[in-house]
Each structure stands twice: as C-alpha cells, then as structure tokens.
Length: 292
DNA sequence: GTCCAGGATGGGC
DNA sequence: GCCCATCATGGA
Image (tube, rainbow, N blue to C red; front, top):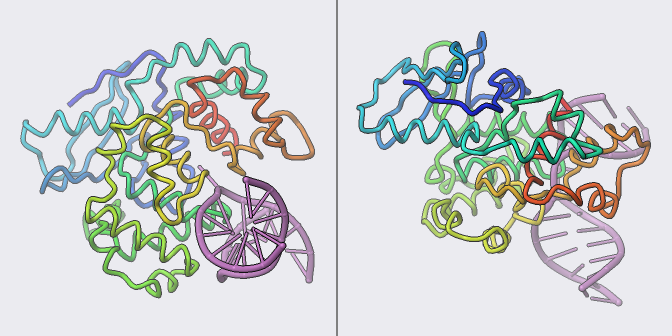
C-alpha cells in the first residue's frame, strides 16, 4: 500500500521527532522504518512505514493482513498522523518574514506536525506532562502504557497499544500512584477514562465544533486547563490556530532562539507571534523541534 | 543541595 | 476576579 506525500514533506524530519525519547513504546523506529500497531475494528495489525520511493510512503503489513475494505481507514490514519493533508506552502511563505521561524523552517524543512490521533491518548499524555520535565513525563507515560496497555506481540521488541479507556476507568487512583503519578493526576486520568468510555467526551463530537467551542468543551474536563486544552487542540484535533502560549517548552525555545537570558513574557510572545495567524500550531511545533 | 519542569485546582481575599 | 499554596518527584 502506498500513500502520496505532499511536496513539503520530509519523512526523516518526522522520524527525528518520533524518535525523541527512548521511553517511547507506541511505535518503534529502526533503520528509517516505523513500526506502528493499529486497531481497526476488531483487527490488530502492525504497520511498517517507510519512504523508499520519492513522494510516497510505503505501508507494509507485518502481521495481520487487513481486508481491502479497511485500507482506506488505515490510509486515513497515516495521513492524519503525519498531517499530510496540510498545505505548508503558506506557512513557509509566512515564516520567511518571521524573526523566530525563518531559520527553523529551513533547518527542519518538511517536518509535519506529528499528530496524536487518539483523543484519550492525547489527553493522557498532556495531563501526565503537566508541571514535570519531559524526561520524567516519558517515564510515567511508559509505565502507564506497560502497566495497562497491550503489547502487540509478546515476542521481542514489540510496540504497544495505548491503554483502553474501559480498562483505565476501572482502576483505583492508588494503581497510578504506584507508578509515581500524583494523587490528583491519578484522579484526572481515571475520571477522563470514564468520560471517554461512556461517550460523554468523544473526538467525533469535538471535531464538529469550532476552535473556541472545542476548547470550552475540553476545559469542562477535570484536570484540563488552558494549556492542556490548547495542546490537545493542536496535537489531536488538528486546529491550526491552537496555541499553547503558556507552554514552558515554547518559552524556552523562544528564549534560546533569541539568545535571551530570561524567558519571554506572555506579552513578548504575543508580539512575536503577531504574524502567525492560522499557523500558531505549526510555529509551536517547529519551536518544540528546536529543543531536541 | 537547589531549582525548575511542555499546569490545574481549590481556597482565601 | 486575582493570588497563592499545594501537588510530588525526577532531572540537570
């Protein structure tokens, strides 16, 4: 199976971001190939994604060959994961005039905003990452996945499926506190799992809304504040104008790019981002990339 | 040992 | 509505 890629696309740049943590368990990168387990309906398949031909992604099924009827859904997942349906030409044109972005868009040309298509996964990742450094966040994330997720294959180095809301909803906070989650984060994650499992929150519903409506809906969830809402709008729901302006990583990236000793104020950032309309999410993502 | 980390909540004022 | 203590531990 093959997927056409747009002109402004670099698989290797995407792999840099996907490979940023040793604690990643939801995919495996080896030799410029990504292994990704995927549940489509009842089928559990293992995708092998590579970029051997120009302008194409090659998708091979390592284990579990899905029926032809599911191929469209699989392709749609890949297109979303690598954000292939976005035309980056306007972003790059805007970036040429931008103090912060002009270097980054040259250095990381073809990098796509790597999405987290699964809403539960995106929210869990954001909540776990609140107020702790990224390395520790990945440690907790790995423990969560290895404790309540599902390994695709029991043999060797196999990637994992993210824990299902149904299973997490049945946990007691102490189960997560054993993994060194705080008591509050444990409650947030379990409460969120209940909301997802019962269908009170769904990606499908949120995608029908405008940015501000979806943001308000997310803010109703206990444990989801302004940063988490914006982060999920950006990484999962694909809103181009989502902008986690409170993000410490963003602040540090800006500080380093400008060579400042102190972190920028929110007012500084608003001025620097004045020209980013409709590309705030991409600008943020390229600044994240600059921290690797 | 110190300081900060890709924040959110609940209470006091 | 704003301010602030609290969470809770790892990593640099």
